[in-house]
Image (cartoon, rainbow, N blue to C red; front, side):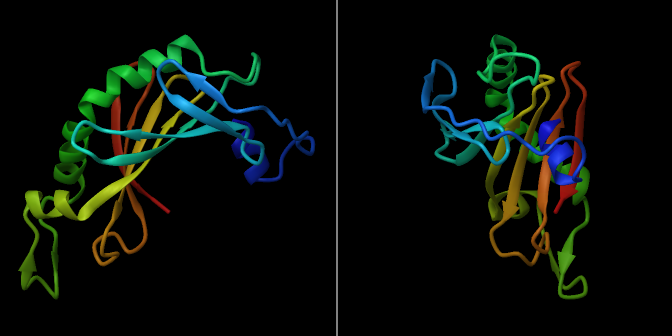
Amino acid sequence: MNFLKRLFGLGEPPKRVELPPICDPVFGDLKWDSNYDWWEGRYVSPSGEEFEVTVEPPSDAEPQPTEGQRQAFQALVPRLAELKMLAVRDYFPNFSVDAGEEPYTEARMSEELVPGNIHVEAGLGVRMSWLDSLTEILGGHALTATVTADGKTYFGLEG
């Protein structure tokens, strides 16, 4: 929420908080980004895909990842490949380039999407994004899958 307030210029000017790096038991090595007030790290999936990870701590608590955020992340990580394929199916059922002359299959589309970010929200939702390796498919946008704290899944384009 702090990130959105700063993005739209709402509220008090931010007070920069500098924190030392931490080693979280689930997220691994994290560095504090005082521009966005969140932790940043990396996650490498079992298939070798490397995602940037950002963890937004609740604004009413210590600026540390919470147990709820760890659980949300751990519940979704095994679903990365499934969510990617569901996002492709949901968003690109009949995608083609060159005026329809070159259709994209789900498998080809999935291959051309590269890992972007896994953002763990303060409210326990998790958003994953994949980027277009060629920029001709998404035009610089990111394909996203958001799983809310109550388990609902939404797909979309960002950027």
